[in-house]
Length: 584
Image (cartoon, rainbow, N blue to C red; front, side, top):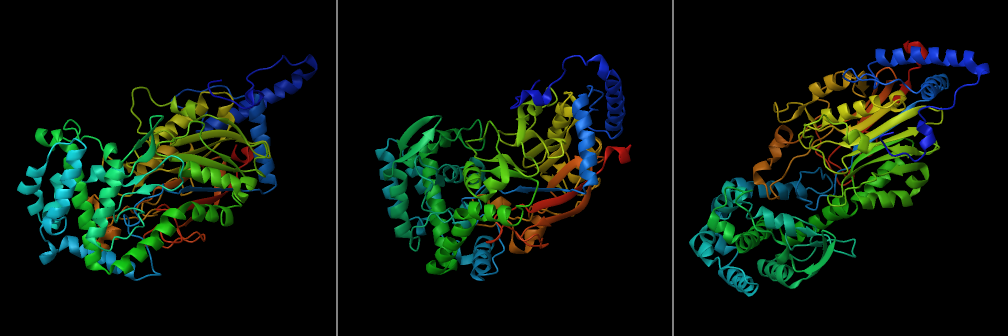
């Protein structure tokens, strides 16, 4: 077999010849297998893939047939849920959230929007916020570490720029990455031996120090960048360096808008721009709100959206969806997996993570299998087989940890392939991944008999940009072409949204910011999440989506919220089996 197995005998291809006394029985089995194989092909299942097929394993075919019949006879249903729980966002202000408990939130975020869209006399020179004295101290620090002098850039350009129209909203500054690059590298740093990351003193992360004054911020920022060695792991090596040493040169080859002269001094230049950027953020917040008000608000948001994200997520899975037979999750951290196994969830479910987990992004697809429904647990992981089944020569935009595909047998003896998948931002990997799953199943005499349950964040769009994003209706046609359907039927409703998130003005990419009035029109409001299965295997009894953690979905509500920790809704469906005999 092409894939790893925990129980090799489970997928035994052949066997010893049957004794003569069992020949008649064997003939009956072969006849039944032929009929069931014809049924599989008629349904367009895994046994038919671009004209390629294998003969189904007769024992597993019989088990699948009898198991489906037993499940139907007992009126047992399959409860399936899928949820992109979303990786932890280190900036609590990045996305608009629904925060009805505290009206100060919308007041502050709307004021920041006004500050940046219509600054008026608030559009003061940079030097009135990041002062000459601050620059002088920064220049001294940069000279001491051996960097080139950038005073000509300060005197001749940056100190005279207006803080909004000529700095924060300068598109060239963005394309050169002079402010966003140092923010990305030093915003939140995971350190060896600690569960808590270390954060740069700024508004847009989990930093909990006092930012009520610019001098106080500057003192903390300077100390963080130059005087605070941090133990970090880099390509297997432990380094103990202050954050300034973690910065990377900005190469013209990758960012063509940067000049050759700027490229030569990109380390000190980005450090200066990063300091100006953070100073403006602190200045803005303290201008539109009292420091005590916005900092208290931030602490509450950090606690609920960031620090308590994993416990909140596990509470919902355990208390609301703990009766599921199958749960597929996307963007799961190693910490969540570890914590889930220690809770009641670990007693109820086999918690299956990829054998080759993504330790860098720390975002993995994971499958929970009910121990009651699947008493023997997972049989094998076939992710490698799926990934080796992509069309040759086609570049599929997936990352490590995005796909998890396993096999398991339920208590009625039905063999399943269960898969979880996190699509790329534009959804361009979604169709190729399904094709690869179907090709993998069609390539093997055992897998061809299995029933597919596929939960995924397809990242599909209601109004996709042609050639650049995956249209949801085209995705529907794709899964139907394999004899599959979804919890949303053969033709998904393009306006049946499972996401509603919009970027605010408190993040580095202002070109992606949405005004409060445009959250709905310009945000990511799309039909992205699906549960896919064989059309002649199961039918939908009931499907619902949930953005509250209470099996309810509030339309036109931006999320996450303080009570719902993801920007994707939970999707759940109850499936009724279709016995092979009735389908035939």
